[in-house]
Length: 196
Ligand SMILES: [Zn+2]
Image (cartoon, rainbow, N blue to C red):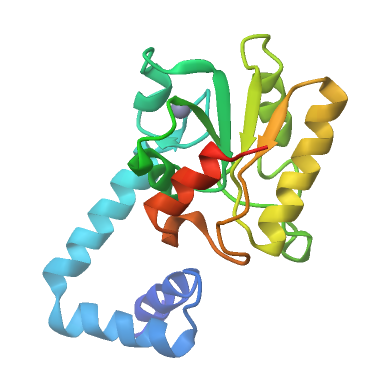
C-alpha cells in the first residue's frame, strides 16, 4: 500500500455510514488518529464484537445475541396479538406506553422501491408464516405514518387478507409523516387503543 493507503481505506470505510460524505469521513478519521487513539481502539473493538455477535431473532427478526430475543421468550405475553413495527426503536416506543402486551415482528426497515428495498428485504414472507400459525388472531400494523410506512402497511395488509389473517392499523392521531420513535407516549397509547 502507498504511504497513506491505510488512511484512505479508513475514510472509505467511514463513508459507508448513512449521511457521511468524504469531507466528514476525513474529519472523523483525522479526529480519531490525531486526538483519540483510545476511542479508535474502542470503536474498532465494539464494531468487531457487534458484527460478529449480533444476529436476527428467529421469531421476530429484531437484533439479538441469542437465537431468540428476550421479548419473544417472555411467555407472559398475549400470543394472539402480533404488532408489526419498522425498527427496534419503534418497538421500544410502543413498549414504553405499557399499553401493549402482545408480541412483535420487527421489519428492520420499510418498503422503499426507490432504494431497491422490496418485500423480501423486510421479511414479509417470514411475517406471513408467523401470522398464519393459527395462534395469532390479530396483526397490528404499527408502521410509521410516512408515505413509505403507509405503503408498507398496505402491502402487508393485502397479503394478510389473502391469507385470511385479521389485522388492524394504528388509529390516526399519530401525526401524518411522523415516526413512532419521536411521538409522545400518550398519543401512541391512544392510537393503539383506537386501532381498527
Ligand atoms: Zn424476538
